[in-house]
Length: 327
Image 1 (cartoon, helix red, strand yellow):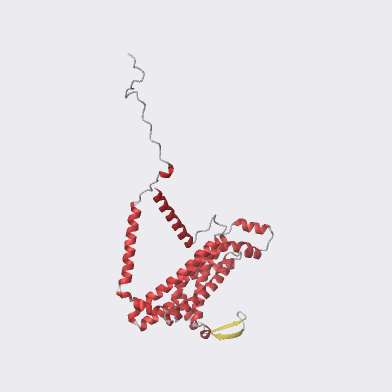
Image 2: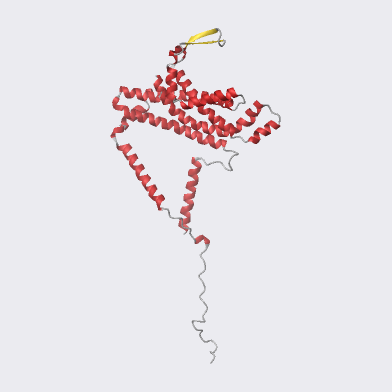
């Protein structure tokens, strides 16, 4: 018997209920992947850092009152000035010597290549303290130095001990040592220039010297300058060895005052440490901006400065807070 019109349909024949409409994209949230290991490592590092800072501040052995007394004393500042002078002179002379050694290493003359290679090999193998002590006792080997015709008569002579002051010995020793490392930095920068640049300049018929000065070397500076600025950080710390040739630099002044005031050895060492941290930090900031300057043309966008990073982080945080509040 047929169902009358309008009769109820059985459950088996009833159509399925319509699916719930999807949430709009704005209401959907993408949950980041949980990384418990990262959070545990972060917590451990923060705890260890807090313990280190707490011990550094509360330990009476550091004598922070004496640290404040010695930090700006004229003796320490005089030593700091000597450190800056030795660093400046050695950096300039070391870079000039490194350029000459690199050119000799890249020369077609086998004699120049061999001499340059031996120089770099020798001074990179001998510790800096040995070079300084050898120069400090150089007058025992050669009491007088003369200028004249090789293997012939001398035009004039002078006493080496009077010419080689403590500052001269420190600057010459560090410059000789630094030139060996600067030579490899310059050579690596020159070799980093694309070979097509050499071929294009040669095809134009430009002289070799002009090619190097105006085409090759400006492009090599993109690699040379940042690396050599990084080398200056090691140079600043290396100047602490001039104390052994009787030159009272920053470390030498702190060591000398520590011998006079034995109870202040730790504060004086902390004073020297903080000043070295300040100097290397300044050089690190200079290195960042030098690398950023020479990165122009090599990258699509320049790396952001610390201020730009902070501004971007603040903007992202504010946008995230607004999204959380909207949800």
